[in-house]
Length: 135
Ligand code: CO
Image (tube, rainbow, N blue to C red):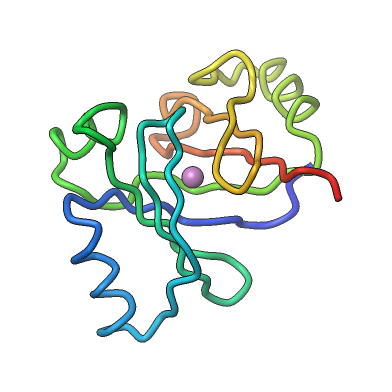
């Protein structure tokens, strides 16, 4: 079951410039950075009011975020909802006809398990589901 909006991801061609914009110009605090090798991305997290902005940038000019930058030059990339049971949610959504970018959840940032709903299944919006490790 979906619990909350975990993050809004923005693909950026220059992550240092993007961090500078959010921190210095918009006054939002940088909470941390993390590489996510399974997605070929490096990320920066900036919490805002119970959710966070996640800046994403390709590692080594590879992967889906690089393809997005090549095509669109940056911008809103995906929404991520936190779920308490990603396996059940994936199965329910598959039964309703939704397609996913991977058949099984993949390792995401912060020790999460994540899966992406194909944007063609969701009105052109790329939606990520993320389940945090149980305490
Ligand atoms: Co994400």
